[in-house]
Length: 229
View 1 (spheres, rainbow, N blue to C red):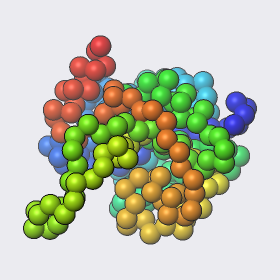
View 2 (view 1 turned 180 degrees about the vertical axis):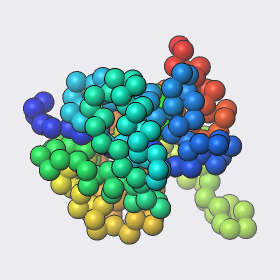
View 3 (view 1 turned 30 degrees about the vertical axis):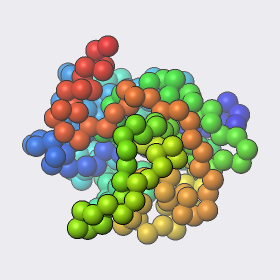
């Protein structure tokens, strides 16, 4: 993939934050001195390969998101739009705002505030041999079992073939646009699953243990510790 291609990022930040017990949407919970969303936006804005950023936030929070980007000097974050009822709907809203000349679209969850620059490098550099998408993954250390609705173990899965998936995830722009348009967006837990369902080839690169997802207050505290390291 040429270094000259246009790369845009869509930051998905439309979650409610109920499990955090927060009064504000998750992306606007305080993380240090700024809203949580600011950390990942700043990391993407600082990366030289990223040309522009679209923010997808809860309805009514678009103006605050724009002010946040101004406050942290994120000049590439020029667009803020309202998300939808599902994550996939929110991704679709963000992708619709990406210029048509973009060759690659990164989709990142604002709930993962720590985005190391070398992780972005690996993801963007991972396109080869006809790949339509590149996702960062980590090995799973725990034993994983499949259980039924009654809690009975059905089988023990081979964890050597299992990976935990992170974001950002990157896709050829045209492939992602088609996958989002074609998919039943009520399912699909990440963008890669939509592209896979549409027949796209998704490959993996090494993730980063620092890129944790914020779900609970304990996660938030852990991310603060990691950022301080």
